[in-house]
Length: 134
Image 1 (tube, rainbow, N blue to C red):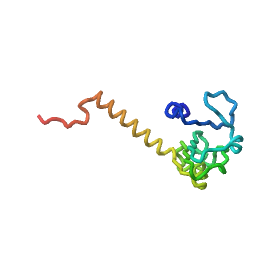
Image 2 (image 1 turned 180 degrees about the vertical axis):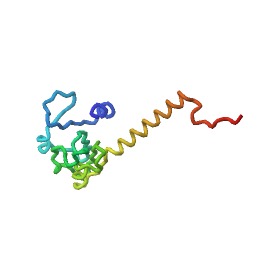
Image 3 (image 1 turned 45 degrees about the vertical axis):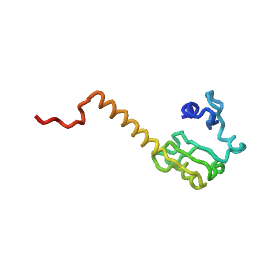
Image 4 (image 1 turned 135 degrees about the vertical axis):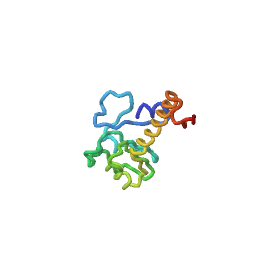
């Protein structure tokens, strides 16, 4: 996720937030504890990309200080089960726009299907064409 963001939007800064911020990563990394002392832009995209809150433990969530979330923020959780997660419910309660991982999963499936449909047509060019009458 971080590398895709860096590749697609090199001019827009981003930070990873980790319970282990001293881990050697090629991206700027902050601790959860350091978030409250920082100034954040009015508009922000917050992506929750950990497995916390996924089935079978839907009551788990990262130790994010939810009091920081503003109504102008967009919050995404890559988890799709449950939908919405507790993380997204907290963000929505603070007025933020939310997006579930379900949409990512659905779009990924559609893209995958298009790739396989094209490959199928290339491998079996007659597939899907009506049989000619004799």
